[in-house]
Image 1: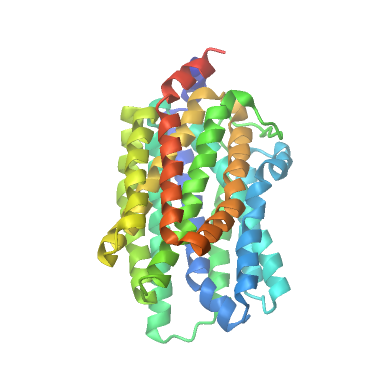
Image 2 (image 1 turned 90 degrees about the vertical axis):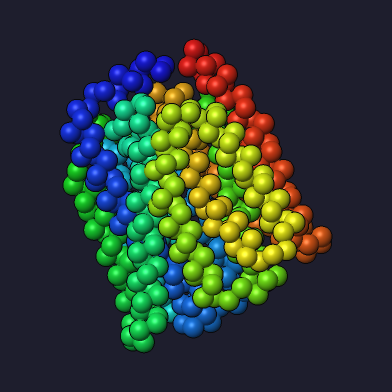
Length: 396
């Protein structure tokens, strides 16, 4: 199967591969810039404009993950389009959701806008990964994914700078205009990718199929989602609720995290290409275990700030999970497998925050992060046999 993979990627000339990567990178950066604008004003928008309650906020965050759970079933529609057209349509849907935010003045309208917005970008990411895998030489796939993630982080940082500039300059720019700006950014990315054709590409054929041959990818994706949702939900909350970190400091930490991501993602991609997925993930999960233990035991807030920033750098190692699937799956099923992986990843989007919140209320924050260390240990144990699993999968 590995030989088939190599033959497929070599079908593209070097110039064509670079062209495909440039347009998917541009589309990704346009998306992340728009998402950054939306997330930068979201909390203020829902409080100042909609005056929503904490319970309503929790509901919105929950339904935001629903399209992720439905990625595989919804992606069946993509069989009628080429991958580039499908990617463009997903971004246009994302832009429509952002535009709806500009005319949202009630909670029900926010629910609709959130669902449209979330559905668009959740459906985009699996096909984005598939395009990059197909348009990259086998030995440079992780490097390309690292460059893609770095570009996205740079765009997100730029959008954060725009939000900070607008809020501190005293400019009277309403939330509606910011959401429209975000929509325009994503729309331009969608139109750009919509008008391009992946050389040698055909219509995607995504079916809802849990393929046991790719169980290693599914398991790693599930564990990675658990780790991500623990830190995404509780790391910042720990700094604010326990250590009273002010909003200005949190914005600065977020900006520093983006800088770290910009610098480290290409480096991590090269490491994965040179070391292979198993060694890279083993190193990653050893560091993640230490990170979670640090959250649980350290009481010095400055040390926790460092842990918070480094955490975002370590998330770049998830590219090894993406390229692992590229090793064991033929190119014609990549979109389907990535879509199923996205669905599995989001299973933890609802369960982990609920379980973690319950543990926090009963036993305190340390138990949540020690639970994260346990998840990382399971990931480490499974990653240590990844080479054997890859050999078994490619010889079937």
